[in-house]
Length: 336
Image: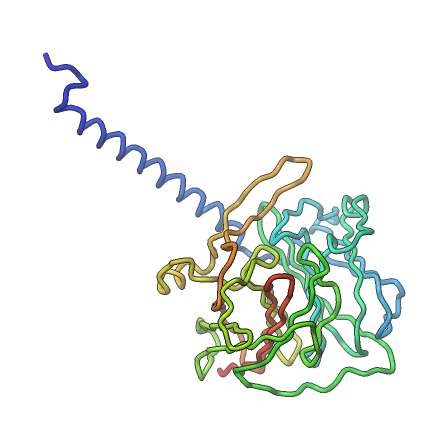
């Protein structure tokens, strides 16, 4: 009788073990893929948001406190939030003229009140630079789904917001603003404002953009005529985008991607998942939604998106180079 471990049997054993490993790895990856997919569903009906402000009448140029009370459909506090893109809650602010942007979070402020968050109330502070109407969007995530809500706020004051102006240029000089530490920048950014550093950005997009069709946009970044290859993650993503149309009837917060040695066609197929993986922390610190952005990348960042209605859209960008946060902003027209 031959030994089980004789030379003629070893290849069969190795093959069997290898096939078994591949089987279980495949099951594990499939389960992870399906589990992550559950977090891509955006819901609005199960989240209710009430906004309280101090002062009640907000004036341009004066800091305001915005308190968002989150409840579920049963009226109970909405507290089981995951940390996604390094923050528990994202607040996006855009002026009606599509030239003012704010992106802030409760963690950005030293006086964060953890006790009120346990009751479903999350607080941020913001100084609106001009009087007029603003759209505010909230993005949060639980273990079940992503939730997004938007509302409006009217700001009083003598300094009025400028009118909407159309600018479809595809190459721009943009400014960097020195971060406030920990990927924080709590001030309003104006598209015609001046920052602390200068960059050049070229946006490549198809000539005609149509409703319902996937649009692929490339952003190419350079400084002093040289491509930038050491961009770094900002809030756990290569680049954040806020997309708003001139009707101010909705707002989209999405994220860019980088190639990471990946085939472009494969990127299009996998774009909904963006390479994210799920990680759980200890119960005392809650859950965390962690990304897989490389430590350094550039000079190109990609955006894949679709538009649901025709019109003029402003695409606000936000990304980081060293300690500078850039806000490249481009306008597009979408046809039926």
